[in-house]
Image 1 (tube, rainbow, N blue to C red):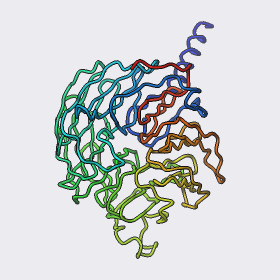
Image 2 (image 1 turned 90 degrees about the vertical axis):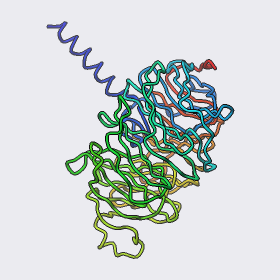
Image 3 (image 1 turned 45 degrees about the horizontal axis):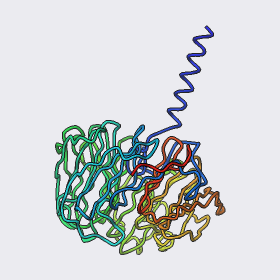
Image 4 (image 1 turned 90 degrees about the horizontal axis):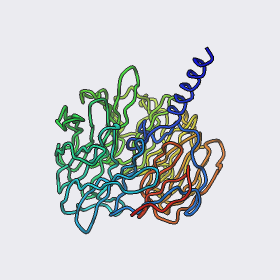
Amino acid sequence: MKSILSIALLLSLNLATVIRAEDWPGWRGARGDGSSSEKNVPIKWNATENITWKAELPGLGHASPIVSGDRVFTVSAIPETEARALICLDRKIGKILWQQTVVTSPLEKKHKLNSQASSTPATDGKLIYVTFLDVQDMVVAAYDFSGKQQWLVRPGQFKSVHGFCSSPVLHNDKVIVNGDHDGDSYIVALDKLTGKTLWKTPRANKTRSYCIPIILQLSGRTQMILSGDKSIASYNPDTGKPHWYIKGPTEQFVASLVYNPKADLLFMTGGFPQHHLLGLRHNGKGDLGNIMHVPKAELPQVAWHHTKASMVSYVPSPISEGDYFLIVSDNGMANCLAAATGELAWQEKIGSHHASLVSANGLVYFVADNGVTTVVKPGPKFEVVAKNELGEGCFASPAISNGQIFIRGDRYLYCIGGGKQTAASR
C-alpha cells in the first residue's frame, strides 16, 4: 500500500511539473495570446547576470524564437547570400545544431521596421513550419527536428511594399497562414504532413495586413478570429467558412487580437490610417466603418472604444491578464485598462515598442526596442517589479518556457534564468 501511494505521489508530482512547464510552440506561445501558465519565471537580469547562455545568430530577423523540448528554433535572413534560413539550437547550452536554407531569392523590399525573416515558426513537436517570401510567392515549408525538409509549397502570391510577415498557426491537422496583401488576399490551410491545400478562403479587399489569427472556443464553436483586410472576421478553422464579419473600423492592422475570459470580450487594436482600440463581443456582424459617427446604442457588438493614439498599438500585440488589459503604443506609452469597461487605470511612458507583450505568474513583460524589459504588475496603479537592460536592440517578441525567457536581440539570442552563464558555440 505504501509503495502504491509513493508511486501515486510521484506520478502526481510529475504531472504537476508537466502542467507548470510548457513549450512555446509558435507565435505568442501555446495559446497564441502571449500568456504563459508557468509560475517560476525570471524577473530580474541584465547583460551579465541571470543569463544562462547567449548565442550569436547569423543574419537578421525579427521572428520570435520558439521552444519545443530541448530545442529552440528561429529564422534569419542572410543578406550576403540572400538565403532565408531555419536555425535549430540546443536549449541547454545555446549551441547551433543545424541551419537549413529554406529559400534563396532577392531580398524583398520592406518597411524600415520590418525584416526579411519576421514570421515566427510553429511546431507540433514533430515538424517545424516556416513561412517566407520568394519574390512575390508565399513559401510555406516543413522540416523535421533533424533539419530534413519534408515539403515546400507556394500556396499563393503576396505583394506589399512593406514586406512580408505571416506566422503559421497550427490547428489539428492543418497549418493556417494569413495572406492579406495588396492583391487577391486569402487565408489558406495546408495539410501538416504533405503541404496540400485543404481550403483557401478569399478575403474581400486587396489590403495588406500582418495579423496572425487566434483560435478560441467561443459561443459554443471553434472560432479563428483576426483583424485585417479592412475588417474583423471569424472563420471555422476546419473549413475556412466564415462565422461572422465586421466591416472596419480602419484599413490596416498588424497586432493580433486577444481575449479576456472574465470580461468575455475580444480586444482589437489598429492601426492605420485611423487609431482604434475596441472591446468587442464575439457574436460578430455589423459595420464599424463609420464608428466615429454612429451612436453607441447602434453598435451592440462594441463594449468600449478608444481612439487616442497613445492608447492604441499598431505593431505590438496587447495582452489580457486577470481583470486587466494591457497595451503599449508603438512610441512606448504603456496602458493598463479594466478589461470589462475599458476604463484607463494608468498610462506611463516606457520606451518605443515593437515586440509584443507576454505574461507569466501575474506579471506582464514589456520588451522595448532598446532591449530594456520592464516587468509590471497589472493593477490600479503603475507598479514596476523590475527593469532589465540587455544592452542590445530588440524587435522580436520573447518566448517563455520551462522557467526561462528567450529574447532575440539584433545580434544574439539570450536564454535567461535557470542556470549559470555560458558562451554558446558560434
